[in-house]
Image 1 (spheres, rainbow, N blue to C red):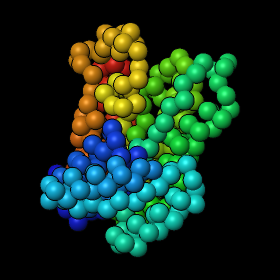
Image 2: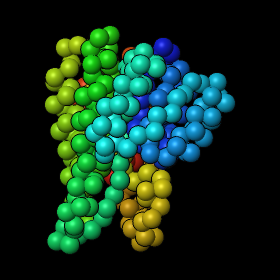
Image 3: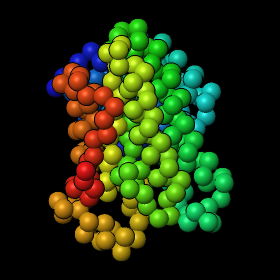
Image 4: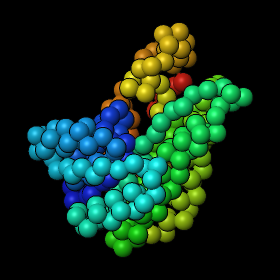
Length: 247
């Protein structure tokens, strides 16, 4: 699978799954625009990609800010000429039981995890339509498929991403643009490192493959969906959960 000549933009690229996706896409030959709030972490990532012979450019951006999204995509397209591949990965958690959840925490998670994917896709699709080729990949979650106590906002945002994926796939399919989602299960990242040991052990018992996933497991699937080899796949949710949820 080669992505030579392609330009990819990855949100939430400063750490975890987003960082792994940026590294994997660059290793496959894509020029990668990495976007996140942390200037310092983006600079480190660009340096690492360039050190491995790849091409990367940092675009600091808060995906929850609509004006930042619009201006950043304009700059990226002006600088790199196009966007072929969009990975909507940025996400946060604000866990609490639904009866105690504050509206601000609901809004923050929905805005960052779901609304940002709509905004970023909207900005990228114009470039994809011009070249009649594009890949949009949304990073959802197993908890968007099965729910999770204490994560009503997170689960709702990730379930919403699945609906968004299928709707966009239907809208742009005739222009040779695909839109798919990956649904990671329990992946070892900074976001999951704060989980209690009891939660981790119980999660492990529910995984038939008997191990926690890695960001690279997700990145490999993203790279496949971004490639020409996945040209007849759209509106699909690819589960990467070690068998935690089947069917």
